[in-house]
Length: 327
Length: 263
Image (cartoon, rainbow over all chains, first blue to last red):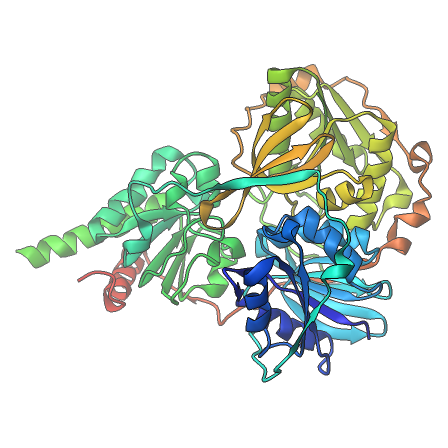
């Protein structure tokens, strides 16, 4: 078995919760594995992040360099290429940083790359068996990866049940091995998202529209339903991409994280990036004209219907009931 | 600026209900409607807009067969000046590393300042751009949602990170960027535009033209292989409501109320 490493991201001196998910993924590769965490960064924050990993990992490799104070993927890749022994397996979270880092890292380590793994089914000779998804989550595939030259595996956030262990690990300083770090891409700053007119994180009920709403002129149908219920209208990414709604209304990993009591997904297929923005286990009602839409696998209640017919019907019923109740 | 955009023809999920085939080793490809990968279309639009601002040319390239020419023509109708098809039977069964290796050989025959890919295609891997950049030793940025051309062969790009925030970077040319949807509003391509480029001859490169041994990139060389397709069983699945629209609406109303949605 190759040595297994987990590249752990951190913020403000605390390792990300995904560290425990990567430890779980490593055990799926090899139940007896004792994965090593690798943490890059600088100064007191790096030291604190390494310390916070001691319960979960038996060994933590610290790679400190002033140039790594902000996680620039090009610099992190160079550091890892120097530090990680040839033939190793490196597990990375498939988020905006992992997408930036891992494909190039696999080339520089001359190892195989598997992106966005949902499950790891274990070894079969020198092959690792994994599960991925394609076509926006409509289909899963088994993938076989030859790890004889090592592998970089990007792991889907939330796909592996976090594994907390009583490891009491040791921090090993590998900073000297990182080598000289210069980059042709330079971090300048971060632009924080603008607040919108409506704060969708404050509502108990969200009527969320996706591509199935078909055009901007149809959004009022969802707005009328939301008004009747005292809810807000949120949306999925394609609606923002098409400029039909403001970015501040988008639910998902690149948008807002919401915690409503009821979430009505209207014409939303159910990509994992969207579902990642829905927390607190709300009652999820999915309305979609495609009976095979992945959203039906995670919803509590599903309705196969045309939004443009069903939403006005629902609005009318709610208005009638409320009128009757008011009399 | 000479810009190369790497594009892919994919099944159009808005036009098809995609099914698995009988043996479960592929999706059913007969009668599928294909289109340009959505991310790639944004990348081509972005390339055209950059050239409109600072001059230069846009070239689109794809790896595939004769059928894939249709997406190249579509992107030419949009405004790409050149199109190239890379095609060789030996390329069948490539993994992402193989695709990036082929593109690297093609890039090295030209003189491109900027190479764009979509963030991902229908396989959701988001890998080819980053691999290509590493093979060329060019800098790379993924999930790019704005590009500004600065002086001295430097671009200012923003990347989409968590919570709708944007990470601002400066990046030296030549570089590879993977383009996120929503970066622009891709122009409409009408039948008339496509007809105008219908008879343009599209140059085709085979493995030998690029100095690639097919055995180094095709199925035999692939370290990552898809074994089968199956329909995922996530969660318990929704309770599907049946009945007339009125009946279903009443049921939804009841449920929303019961779950504390409204009083």
